[in-house]
Length: 147
Image 1: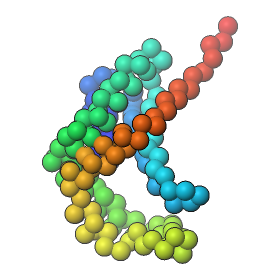
Image 2: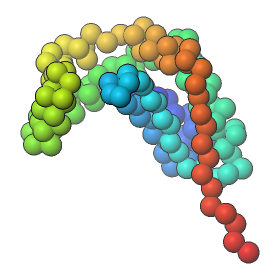
Image 3: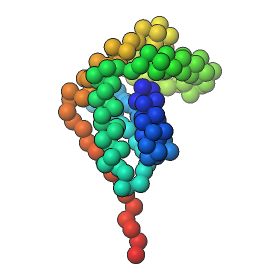
């Protein structure tokens, strides 16, 4: 959520480089514990290097400073609203039951308290830990020019 807000401001609004930037992550336990952070956007191929530089610098900034208080508040409000909305959906409960019976992890227990307890420092440390891994891959997909 932090990166979505920052990238929308920096890459879309300030640079006009894309219609949207999406950051998403996934934690897995099997076959091994790992974290994947992916950042997606579409742009003019001539702008990709410039925009990738902005994306890298902003992730480094989050690792150094964390999100702003305004961003953190906005994220918490969104996540708590989404949680309340999700509780009305069967798919949400099926996913959580599957997770619980597969791994023993109950993602619904103390959800609101957990979200409210997250600090800017927590997010800063998380981003720093991601960057310390040093295992970044950049993938660029292009359409070949037709003649």
